[in-house]
Length: 124
Image (cartoon, rainbow, N blue to C red; front, side, top):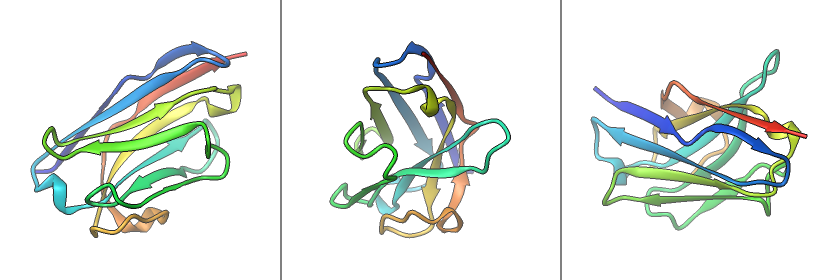
């Protein structure tokens, strides 16, 4: 059974930083792409960032490019999202997602596994 468990969310002031972590279990982590998505109240879940199976390819939403960095440690079965220069509009629940393929993807339908999410609140 695949499990994805996010941690690291919280309340931070605008301009601050947080690092989200997602620990995976239940399948060979290093074979699959991983992604981060977020969902604000009343909004659709949106793509934030993705990383390929070996970390060689990463993509970011335009809204976070230059501020967020995705990385993975295959030895620890963990993917990270380093978030800096946080803005009020980054407030959302952040979800870790396990890809169906090794390649990085921005498409929500290319992820078959989802965590429960971790809340990020940025106060302005």
